[in-house]
Amino acid sequence: MARILILGAGFGGLELATTLSEALGAEAEVTVIDKGEAFVFGYSKLDLLFRGASVGEVRLPYADFVKPGVRLLRETVTAIDPAAKRATTDAGVHEADYLVIALGADYDLDATPGMRELDSEFYSVAGAEKLAAAIPEFAAGRALIGVCGAPFKCPPAPSECALMLDDELRRRGVREDCEIAFVIPFGTPVPPSPETSAALRDEFERRGIELIAERRIASVDPARRVAVLDDGAEQTFDLFLGVPKHRAPDVVLESGITEDGYVPVDPATLATKVPGVYAIGDVATAGVPKAGVFAEGAARIVAQHLLAAIAAGPEPQRHLGQGTCYIEFGEGRIGSVDIDFLSGPERTGHFNPPSAEQTALKEKFGADRRARWFGR
Ligand SMILES: Cc1cc2nc3c(=O)[nH]c(=O)nc-3n(C[C@H](O)[C@H](O)[C@H](O)COP(=O)(O)OP(=O)(O)OC[C@H]3O[C@@H](n4cnc5c(N)ncnc54)[C@H](O)[C@@H]3O)c2cc1C
Image 1: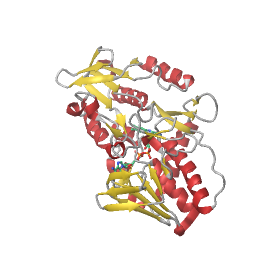
Image 2: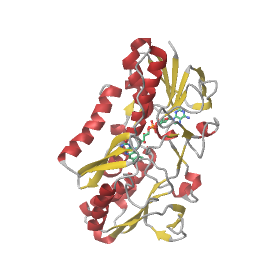
Image 3: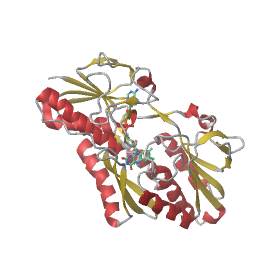
Image 4: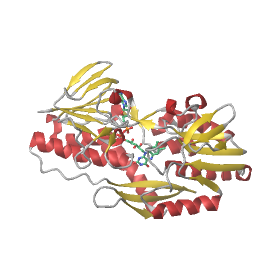
């Protein structure tokens, strides 16, 4: 049996390993490597910030990821040799017949002067945990939610953060003493979906949230409590909730397989320019947004290619870049957008307004993956 090495046990790596295990059973020779001890859904960061969840409650330990034919090793990848399909880790060297890079996107705090010193981002678990302690203290002044560069994970997340912060301040009766503004590098909150963007803009207007579109945070000055935008304009803040600039992890950049910070792939197949090497999810440039649902969709296509090659599986399908992203509209309401980026000539995003059905579907999204990957 061919040896398959998957680097990264996030949305993409977990789904790929699960699909291969389902198809090949104990015969599979799949090794998954991740430096972490547990998986956390991206959206759980909003639960940490605004729903009083603890890190312990949102962690899904890798010890519970048990699949026939799959080994999940807790190691840190320190070097990747794509041509040799070899990864070096802090524990040794792993060689394979097929290599899949699924290491996600890292945060580049140093790309934005002042961001490291300010230490006020909500996109990592540690950052969200820290800000969760600061938000209850904020009762007057200006909250600024700011994105430092595109592409960034889950484009609706800054909008969700603004709306949930508004809820929280209203709940405490201090909203009138606070301003909320947010800065995004796009012209609209969810560019592929005018309907979703219009619904979010209505919501911002109704709640008095200021949207500063088509701008990014160029630097922050922690001493003056000011963020400087890319056009030189200054935005003051008393509370800053930042989205750092993203890029592929250093180990991927150093492997020589990236262009413009990410791994270029054939959008239809997720194949890199190196035969037998694929890249899926946030680490790749595959013509889709950076979100778990797309990492997962890409993983299923790569599984088909691997099964066709090693187990006479059927002809692989084309990667269509389709998926549903759920969006918190505040007040417990959840809507969603059905994204389709690659199936036709146009990128589309169909809006499903907030409803009890959408809330149930988001709950099911998490529950299905907890059950499928972690048996919970
Ligand atoms: C606030 C927020 C809300 C979000 N909401 C949603 C949502 O509602 N729906 C949605 O679909 N997506 C959402 N996302 C985005 C989603 O979390 C990511 O797009 C998704 O996790 C990407 O999957 P991936 O497999 O590419 O990478 P990841 O899930 O990031 O996994 C990469 C893995 O690689 C590991 N790794 C990295 N470097 C190394 C190394 N050197 N050695 C070993 N292991 C390493 C990491 O530990 C990690 O486990 C959200 C993100 C945020 C921040």
